[in-house]
Image (cartoon, rainbow over all chains, first blue to last red; front, side, top):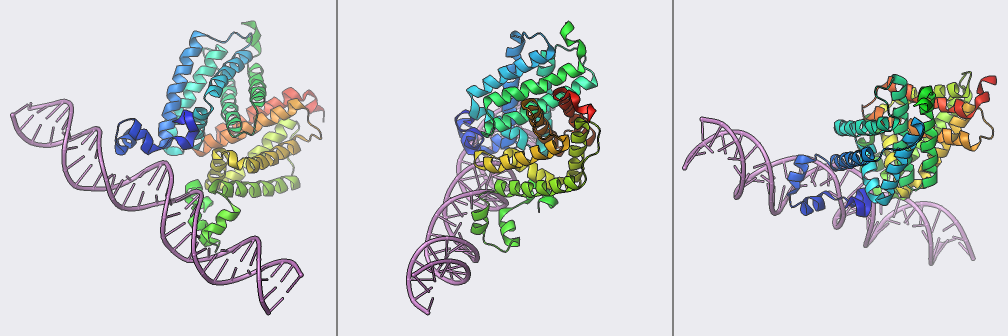
Length: 175
Length: 175
DNA sequence: CGGTAATCTAGAACAAGTTTCAGAGTTGAT
DNA sequence: ATCAACTCTGAAACTTGTTCTAGATTACCG
């Protein structure tokens, strides 16, 4: 349903019906629509993390590899823009009651980026850079989804923010 | 109302009532709740821009001045966290129908940052950096508002992303 | 003034997320 | 096999954003 029409097209009554489950049962497992969509994002992220593990990015520097990874994820999202809309809108609209789930998504994203960087134990500076990259990633997606930025612009923003990595890890080119 | 309880506490019926206006009239001027709150953000941003003009940031480098500016804005938001919640959630939840208004907010934010940088005509690299800073700013606010990041962490993220400016403007220290 | 278009009002109606509840069905331990 | 605890169902109710309508008010123009 999300793939068809994005956030708005996911209607809890319809979800319950196509799941062959009563509405109350759906709410038992997903306390709100946002919970449901954030859970969807978790599962998609896991899938993507698996895919990425099998085909790691091939860039020279950490910055290049992270940018390549995010662009690969971005292209995957472009194939299902409505689904992307549903998941990202849910993520940013989530209030405190969804914090644990959103945090889980964030940790998963962090793991993907750290994988791309090839870092075992990142320092505080590296972690800050990763957080900023995640911020940019989410917000750039939103501007793209709401039609205020082009695909090219998202690419530029990702590449720009990834330069932060070189700032915190001068020896990146040595590996 | 936003100051009291954030996004959820702003109820269109109540807004209409306290404005001494019929519900239909409210919807005539603000086609949706999100439009209303984004308009609120516009007006707050204008006010902040005026305040900042009177007391420009005093840092040495452009990066420092931008970070100082954003931290000042952040402290202002901390005084009304619920209002901040309402405005930021509206901004990121806005769909295409609100694009013009959201774009206006974005332009205003860009102007504030460029002011702090003290740049007359920024190059493409500078503009990319500014966009990334805005991304980080919005997303960091969200993580703070939903209780997933501390004030200190937001500060670090802002300072981290502002280092990007030095990357695109090596002569910053000369001024 | 008189008329016409625009605006406003009160209130109902509609849509979708969420809550609630009584009863039916399942499960697990003893 | 039985009982208690848990779970599921179907349906209604509730909430709040949004739309609609019929009439009242206002503003403008010749």
